[in-house]
Picture 1 (cartoon, rainbow, N blue to C red):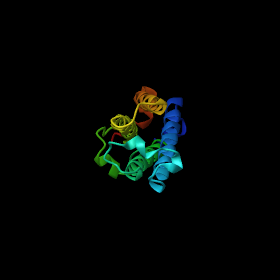
Picture 2 (picture 1 turned 45 degrees about the vertical axis):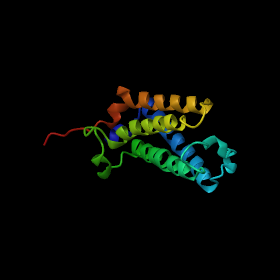
Picture 3 (picture 1 turned 30 degrees about the horizontal axis):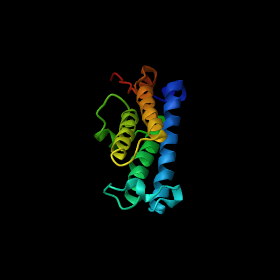
Picture 4 (picture 1 turned 90 degrees about the vertical axis):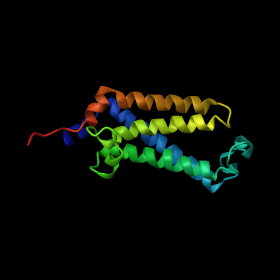
Amino acid sequence: MDQQKSILPFSAKLLIWLQVLLGFGAVFSGAFLMISPDGKLMQMPLSLIEGSPFKGFFIPGLILFLFVGVFSSCVAFGLWKHPGWKWPNVINPFKGIHWSWAGSLASAAIVIIWLTVELIWVEIGFLHYLYYGWSGLLILLTLLPSTRMVYQKVKTIQ
């Protein structure tokens, strides 16, 4: 797998960068929402979440920080470095492929779920379209044969 890591196809490199940027943006946005649950730091009025189960932005910020930010950052690291961690394989439904590949699909699904639930309370806007498109691109890049080949586990004959 070391040889595969050193020569990444464009699709895998782009996938890694999109995961890095997604994680980076969500970590900072989530942190800002937790630091300023009234939304003032990000210039978001509390009226945006009227009718939601939240009185402020702390819980949505925490969810964004952890499930989109930290998770996508870990996936990006896994896609880049192929660490041999065993614990992510416990929930990896694709046993013949590195956990980070499955994590990339899960990352896109998490964003789609986040956006869809958010739209229960918030009107659709430019960022929703952007992140729905971003998620679609993550799925497409992950499923490309050139990307999948990099993360396929090589079976050795003993």
